[in-house]
Image (cartoon, rainbow, N blue to C red; front, side, top):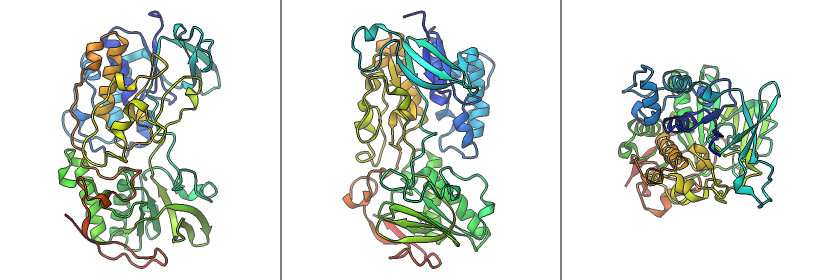
Length: 446
């Protein structure tokens, strides 16, 4: 079907990079973005500074396309999400021109005239990409191949520890946020709780502990499902990504100073609204009372509803592409680097269809922009028939130094890897209720 385009879902970093690689190879491509502009999801967390430096945030084919327009490559520093959009993603979308179509939501992908049950003539049919714009106008685009780079931003995980919203979570939604806060001054003098153990939760904790230092009446409580915060502070100086190392070091200092009260082994089961604020209740009966706001920063999950008429293979645990699941599983890869993956690992039973970027990782929290750029380079080469280039690995990832995946409640218990069991560990209280002023923390890792 050489006269049909390759359709890319999502004009984020990986979607635009895929378009640049395909355009460079002379392949007709169309990027469909549901937002009003390219990089719309990144813009929503534009206030956050990335821990990757500029050279690690720019795709090679995209750079070549941009430089042909006179664009000057940023070479130093760590941009915010807003700067990543304004200085790179927006110019890249402009350079791709009418290959990028915004305000176009993909509602479904199928084989033309075939639902997922039908075998007959399936591979000979083009893909049918169903769309809807903000006015409700529907459309259908035929494609020779489809690359799903739509990400996971629209589907944050709930606070409930069993994967579903906790009891009362929906009714308390006005007091629960699933995004890293921008301004925090309105929380001065109140108690705020953060749920989660990843980089988003760490960012939120640091913002709020800075507020607490300026306004001593502010209390910050960090709720962790795991039994130790050792993995939360990351690999520190052992992390090849310097700013991510700094994030872990700052988190460690905040814990040691008593600026944040850390409660471990806390798996949220229920929320209750009371006169003094929101009460968070764990499955073992412990509770944190009086929070003016709760930030549930527990990761994201992919939305596969629009793919229900395709034959796709996802890992049963991670909802990641099955071919890469073993390489990214946080239950196994608690430390070190996750190797680059390409077209051969991302291949689906539905030939010509690929899931790339953070969506390909499902619920695994180990994704880097560099990983996605290598994925789309390989997929573009495959679609162009350059199988030697598709099989080649052109990326060496930095050591992550990040320990303890989302599926490992007690990463220190094995004594293996970069997070051996701490020799001294004193955090918070044996019971979470009632709360007293946060004690200091002694933390020494072997």
